[in-house]
View 1 (cartoon, rainbow, N blue to C red):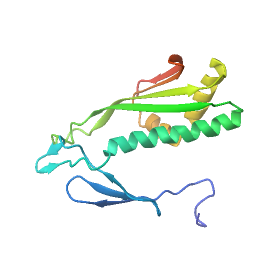
View 2: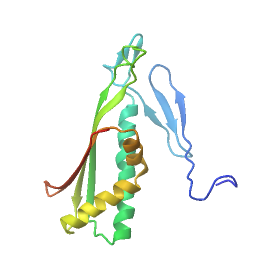
View 3: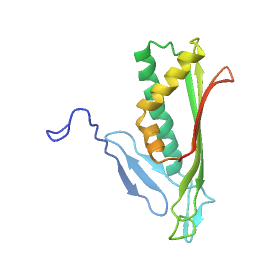
Amino acid sequence: MSAETPDHVAITKVRCRSLGGLAAELTVKDHAPVVADEPLDFALGGLVGTDTGWTPVQYQLAALISCANVAIALTAQDQGFALDGLEIRAQSDLDLRGLIDGDPDRQPEFLHVGVEYRIAATESAERIEALAVESDRRCPQLGLFHRARIPMTQVWTRDGAEVCAFRTDGA
């Protein structure tokens, strides 16, 4: 942190270097670089994906659910919630018009994002819902999606049965 930056503000830096075409190398601090690319069937004019890495949208969804994982772990700790296991899955529906057709009046947009939280816990449904609500509030990535008014469905399940669900229509 610098003298100008308050202690409660985290600064994150990443670097992207084009590898030519649609592929890019992404680096953070001293960690091993990763590659972002598009699939082989993604072609725009003379540019074609080489499928050498995740797509940028896959990285965005991974950022969303890994951030949710952190928020859930911290919230569970603060609530004295006995969390025995967690798996999070996400899916997006993305309207690519404006990107793929060059329409100057459109910008690509998420039409919907669905997140499923598969929780292992012996806590009551009420405690699971309280964990869900508070961890959603605490998650910067979920906040980003909410403030962007992206329609979202979040479903929390235990042993394959729905415990609670939250839906936002993006309005």
